[in-house]
Length: 485
Image (tube, rainbow, N blue to C red; front, side):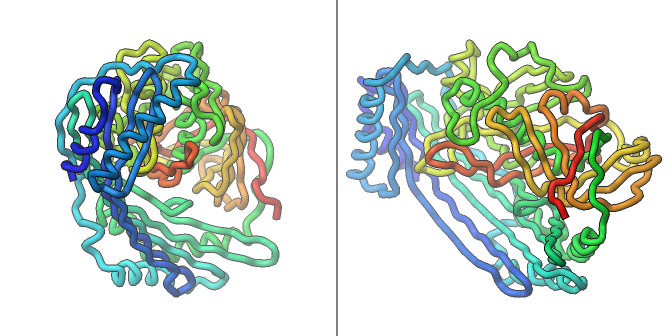
């Protein structure tokens, strides 16, 4: 495969090209799902192709192909250069890249069990056993389950001499139970909503999350929600489970810190950001206990935002985003780092395929743990509501005003959960919300959650991101009912 990338790079005119890189990607995916005791779908996809990015006259050009013949590679290189020249006719200013050292590396993400070594029949058997457990609970009208596997092998070459090979293996899976009664649907998902849990692991992740063992419990909760009281409304103390904190991070911290949104380079898909440049190191983003990092390094954990090098050949790094409540950093590329006077990109450029140009994407944007367990946090709460598992979300195009709905709530009185609540929601303003955080559970409650479906860009790109979080408490939050009964 490397020969194809080297051939493509050789077709760039070094007299004209200020910078160029080639990404050759070979990937394989498998998706297996079940629904109400039957196979839902089974699909297997493989793709191989190459993208070429060049900088000419201060402007980008990009072209791609899945035809790796010498003639096609030459045509693709010429097309990328033509696009850059055409873009230069309308430029407002020249693009400048911060320097990056030449790198030669070969890296593979660790795993214990190759997910593709398991058979489709075994995948279906597992999901159908979980399905049977869910449907054995009276009142369940729909049971669903799915697993997803992906292996990607990427070769990156640049005109600066970098040669990087990376292989990443991703596994994900989850189940969901639905209860339809009257005119109301209640749902419980495990271990998270919108597909479950995803990590940079092998099939061992599916063993770890124990879908069959948790199936009956989540089905019983879905049925019980039909009889539960509606969530009370008003200003309340709220405790969010770790997965919901993860989504809160994604929407109200992760997207606003993407520097291309801040600079107006990305606006059509989900808007820009309230974190304008003058707020850097001047904004009180959260309370003193709120510490958030963007960390792509393997030592942070097996997140969907974990890698050795981004798609500009920049090494994985840990960047402080919020330190003791103070806003301290953006996610950057070589281009945007130069635009704000930084000396180096912090390595956040990624593309979801060979036919897409890299964009600034979240790595693992995580809330660092505090102290104590969830039980201890609940015991120290006199009056509040504990919310689990996201059901819906809405946030404005500057990532400032939001509302989230959860699948299940528990009312807390005198340090104990006293009754189940249905259709809980909460809303707020990003900085006010994070400043209201007064407790974060410790490392024993911290999980690196995977978000496999983050969309950005035109043409759209769907990327996996990671968010480490522990259950956390927030004071004086506006609580309401997400769905009227």
